[in-house]
Image 1 (cartoon, rainbow, N blue to C red):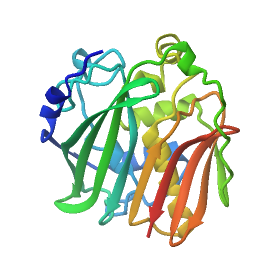
Image 2 (cartoon, rainbow, N blue to C red; image 1 turned 30 degrees about the horizontal axis):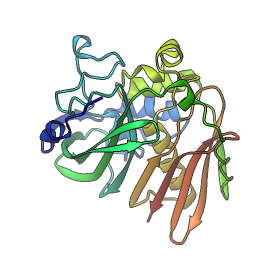
Image 3 (cartoon, helix red, strand yellow; image 1 turned 90 degrees about the vertical axis):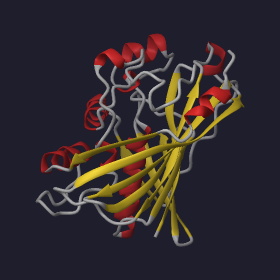
Length: 280
C-alpha cells in the first residue's frame, strides 16, 4: 500500500478545542466503573485521569468509520491503514481538577511519522493536549496513536511465545469483564467497536476477544501508583506493547525504581501489555 507521508504531514499543526463541565454524576460513574471512592461534592478534587472522559469528540453517526471511530480526514489525518490504537503517551500534572469546573482540552497534532514494523507499515501520529480547568492549567498530555494493517493469520500466531511478565513487588488482579469495557467506552464516548462488539473483533479484526482499552489500563496503573505512594504522581508515562483481551484476567504490577515506580500490566501467564513509569 502506498502511503503519501508528505500529505499526511500536512495535518501537523491542526488544532481542536472543546470544553465540558465536570459534574458530580460523572465522578460517581467513574468511581463506580473502577470500584473506587472519592469526594463527590462541588469543589472536591476529581479522580486521576478523569479528564480522558471529558470534552471528547462527538461525531454524529453519519460521520463514523467502519470501526466506530470518527472517520479520518478531519482533525486526525486520513491514514489509509485500518487499525487505529493508542500506542502510548505521557502526562505532566500541574494541579487537580475540581468538581464543578469547566474543563477545556486544547489539542494540536505535532508529528506524523511512517515506520516499518514486523507486520508492515506503521504510521504514528502524535497529539499534544493542554488541559485547563476554569482557565487554570491542570495537565499536559502527549498522546501517541498508531495505525497499522490487519495482520495475516501467520502474523497472529508467532512461532515463539513471548516471555511471561514477571510479578511486581506489588500486584493486583483485574477482571476485564465486558461490562467494565462497555462502561469505560460509555464514559469516554468511545465508539471503537473492538471494545464491545465481539463478532467485529473476531470475524473482522482477527482478535480472540474484546480488546481492553489502553487508556483504561493507563488509568488503572496511575491509580495504583497513587495508592502505593499515597499521593498523585507529578508525571506518568506509558507505552503499549501487546493487547489484552476479555478472555482472561490480567494483573497490575509495580516495583520501585529509585524515586520512581515502574509499572506494568500483563494478562495472567502472558507478556507485558503496557509498561509505565510514575515519578513524584
